[in-house]
Image (cartoon, rainbow, N blue to C red; front, side, top):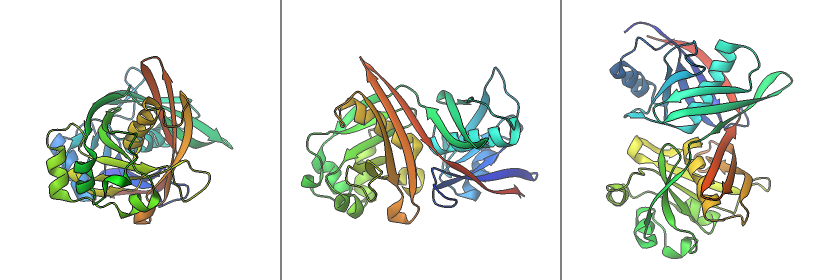
Length: 295
């Protein structure tokens, strides 16, 4: 295996080292799937991305995403972090949009600037799909909760905007904080589901400027808890719009995540429900934290 250049970035962080980190490998066209998987496992972030070429093909950049365990078709913070590297290291000039060609499809990422520097990266996710609902009693056992911890009027439901998640509405911060995955029970719950990870949320928050507080558990992917998850929050935005959580068809909110594992982050969500369709956008800040070579 030859020496490989890589970048480390921090996504959804208000300051460096407080969001969700990943490694981005540029110019990976000559790498096999096995080599990509090996590097992702060695680095052991929740995801690692590989840009197949520094040059656009049909106005898009081909990218592959790996967890330490497997390749995934889509993930939120790797998409934004990779777009950041493409803008900063390859394009090196102001552009409004960068299109990533992922296994899940084409994902456009918009860029806004402050003082001529990139400030916010925001992706439009694929149209959401809604799947099975899960009984609250079963999920209560899987998450070490009681049935009265759930918001009874909102279902526990599979949602996908590229990568499926179970979305769970809880009544209080206390319930969110005390949640704990019982692996054997949880894996039994998800064995017949497309969703293999869960986002729990409440409308009680630590900070007044935020509208929701969330946690994401992804034991199936080798990540017991994720500090900031764009794909899961995209599913959350779609869920909120579908079930009229804020009693309006168009929402624009901030979500706090990662506080239970001392990795505070903030995600910006937008959703617009019209007729039978829902447009979903997820955004956040991105920081370059390091460059290096992997031998």
